[in-house]
Length: 288
Length: 350
Image (tube, rainbow over all chains, first blue to last red; front, side, top):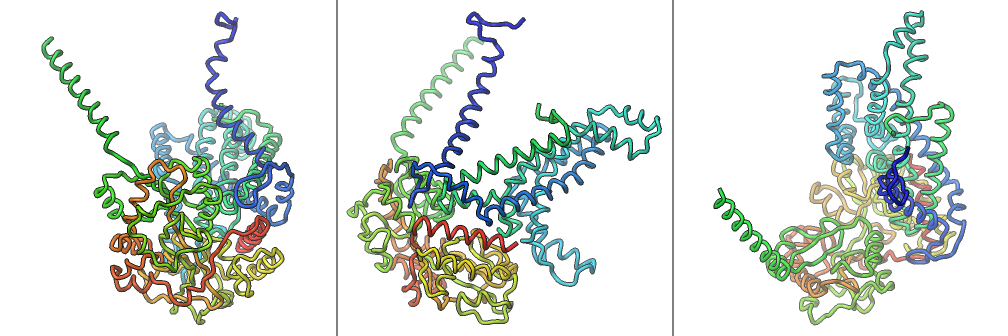
């Protein structure tokens, strides 16, 4: 039986009231504001006029802005694929380590987070720039003859994004793999499955919730992490995030920025919904 | 034991009373000046000098973009800040929005030090609201050792010899504007068809662009990441200071021009302190310190004798720059076209 106070309000509700209020004020209210703003008209000089219009959404259909969404999506997909390829094995093998080493490795993974992400990106500049560390190394090994222009290129942006986000994948996969019952893999092997088959039918299935939450945790930020594209890409890769920032801060077109944000959110939710449908995983590891 | 407790209690009581008194004192004596501008607009010794002399604490908050400043000022309804230093075009809007108060010139004894060249412009024609604090002209700077051609104007940036070698600032009104200048038009062109045409020409610049950055763009020129830079004045000064063999070009097609100025918001909590600070930075020797620090064109004629020899050269406004054109606010429609061709341009860089 549920315990209630005298007026009949369940205790559970009162306990979670702060959470509801928090969501209401800090998530729902700004979201509503943004959606409303996206239907208004920009003022000639400054601010917005309360004239309802669909022009902001129509404007997004201009080829150049549509292409920005495509570019963001492309970059996010490339990054997530690379993050899976590097992060999944890492998390998987980490779960197989002895408990001392597990602690040491997770510590090592955490250390970079003690400095700001921005500063870590500047570290990559030192590595990538002409006559930088990487150039000197390659020339020292006689692989290249002259300085390469590595900075401000697409690969530089991808490297920066993968570097920034891969720990989220590692931890998600690790927590999933660690809880896994390894005797199931042994059983599969005993029953004659090849190592590969045992991995794909047992291990991968069982770690899927971790992998999926890793994808969600890395895909959403990679749609929005425009500062990496600015710093390592020299502003040459136009992402939705930087477009929104520019519309807001420089072009003073707040309604258009709001409309872009709304579309970005819908797009991201749609992709995640689709992904969950395809992989048929309901619960995300680490989310509950 | 009891005695010790009693003594401890007494001591505690005394400490508390003292703290309360100290708190009172704080409130009465410490006046503050809420200064709102970009990061690094004053040398530390100028700020501390003011605090020491007037006993007014400076509370320095900074913004990255003029638009950010205006949005905050609007939210605060012209309050919260005592003194704002920002760009000309945004000041024009702030005045129109009623967020700026008139200066009390009787409190500005050093106002005559301002070079009249920088007064009476579009954003404040009667000089009722603002005091200029630095001016700038975006210029081309290049490393003659790394470039085979001689650069004399914007047009040369399109030269195929500069492939992947140009660093640009990220202000689209300026970059789109140099194309308009090449076409013999104004930076402030309002005709969208003309702006569209400029956009097409701008796309052809894409192969030459190494990077776009608004912050520390001069660094790429100094490190050799790019051989040519189109930079803000302060960046030009810093580039020359680090690498004196760089060459500065005043593009023949015509120059863009901008003034930064200080103003007091309409509901400033401490407008009096703001006047004191404005007057303080107008003193010749203080102004000289400031201009050597920010690297913008010196708007204080009395400060010139106090500048170092190199600074005298780099911080003075050359003859040809006096015909520079202000970059002003344009119609929303024209602005949207600018923004679109700029995004198209950036997308073509990749």
